[in-house]
Length: 150
Image (cartoon, rainbow, N blue to C red; front, side, top):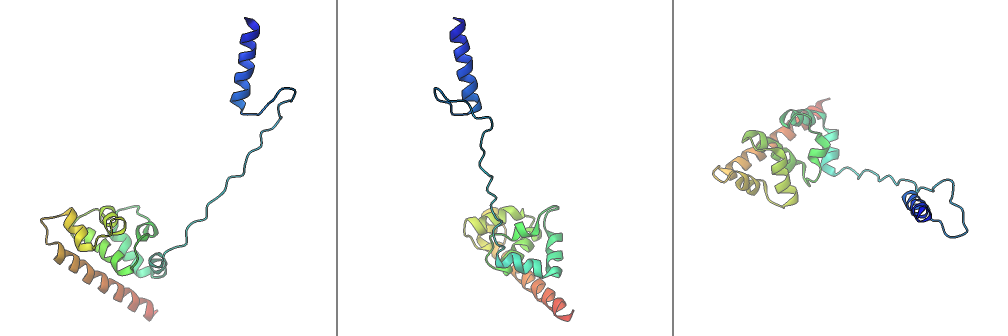
């Protein structure tokens, strides 16, 4: 009885250590570990590069986003700077969470007007989308003019 308990305890210890041991071999003193592969950060998108380059625009957008939001993360997934800026403006204009608008535009492939309609069906969604697009165009023009004059 004691031998079977001892054999079971040894077998359990060997399995717990995950060290391969066969009959007649000694257990290795150190377990080999494979090196952890670090994944490289994905290259920034053109929209993220543009936001990083245009500091005036970045400051204006940062104020409109929720506190603690990383601007590069927020810009990720958008294909055009104008759409990103318009989405930020629309989210603050009609008090819709930016993350909800972004998800519908980036992941679901909706236009800004469709995303607003989906979240606020009773609103004047096309007019709100147009207003946000006009504000975005003005913000981009202003930031480029300021950058040009420096």
